[in-house]
Image (cartoon, rainbow, N blue to C red; front, top):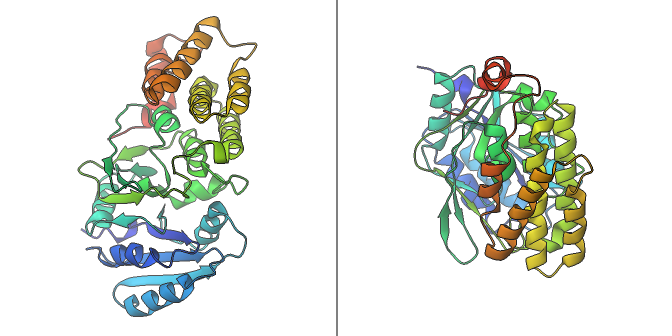
Length: 337
């Protein structure tokens, strides 16, 4: 069976990663599936990154790989990804960071799963994550509602999914105003449109790396305002898409962020976030559950997301019985396999 139409183009933004980009690109070249289309977007590197990428393209062109190097002088990962996205012509696209690595069979597994579900608009997979101390952590998240799971666990973060190209382009691509959590916002905006979303089963075949200076690094205070801005845009996305029942989960993310900021001795910003969730129209019961999320996360440093998923599940649309809501809500088409 020819699965070539289901092979996503891989877009890789890069900035000053001369020490890492070679490993990332070699993991793409080692894929068992051809043809592959790769778009690398240099975001204004001042080191040897462009030369390394150019040499890699020269070595691998004609080996079933079509690759190009674009230059985007405007700084920002979202800007660079959109630059690459505009050149994508394949039916699906995925985004890979310049320090991520995929195992040789990853693209073949993705294409095969999409070929088996040609109705799928999005596909996600679990990853393993290497931190700066050398610890390898595996993610594992399952839920019947992809949107609520993503809001709390970023299951459609940058290197964890592929998406139908027409869907992401019609949705406006990456939000270039955001400098962090742009993938959390993008996944929320895409899933709010009720796409057909499936999950790739099996062991993780992608490894990401957390660096002290990366956007997924350990510090929240250093980028608190950018994180708050991303959550505000997510709330707007949900309201515009007619999905206000998911906004309490965004509030839970605010409470978790407030707890982490408190743990990092940034009480002023934490207090402002807690006040933001104290909406005039927020039922007393929900307010108490949000405070519980904050307390658990502040004391233990984890557990807030699990508590939020257990206690703040989106309610069926008002005026409909639960069974009727399940029958009529297009969300039932948004499946996780």
